[in-house]
Length: 242
Image (tube, rainbow, N blue to C red; front, side, top):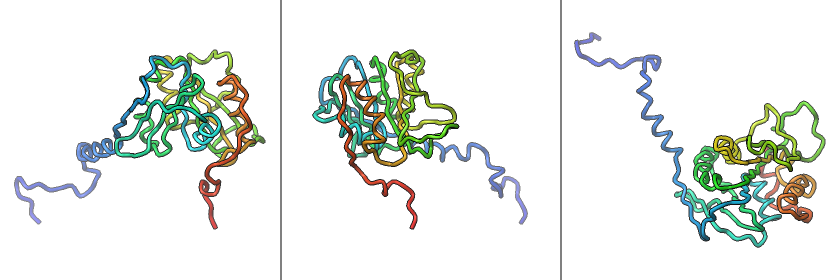
């Protein structure tokens, strides 16, 4: 077919598309990842946090809820505008504990970290707690125990006198809110230690929860009773084929 002067002929291949052609699609994708977080204090917001603990992940949330939060008071909620569930901040025995909503999308971890950044900035000591399955743990040495607790820390926490937990080695990595909290603490020159527990199951029991009992006994200054297993079953967490 003949082409006439001034006629617009569209390219036959994406190889000829300009970068600007996809800008609208990228903007739409970025907007879809943005969320609005609503913070609601049910008690007066503290001017300073002596110890601020951030707990992320279903396993860690279950442990802290059953072993630590008995009788704790909710002082703040942080909720996504379009969701009914929320992250909650508790206060117990001088410790402020933020339980991250288990339905928070991993893609929104950075925005959540930004939402709690003002609280992190006025915290003397920040502790982040998360977990992962042992199959993701990379080490040249074999692991024979049911669980292993490692840590990463900001430059300001490097010389912490009670830092008894081994440092997480390369090439292991951490994602989620706890990773964001540690990164923010490093940039803002804050005292932060992040602990990650690797376990050989998807639920905690009295055996693989032992490192956490020792950690919290040190944080709270008192011995915790043995942990009683509970929560969701292993079988709805793994890749089970029949």
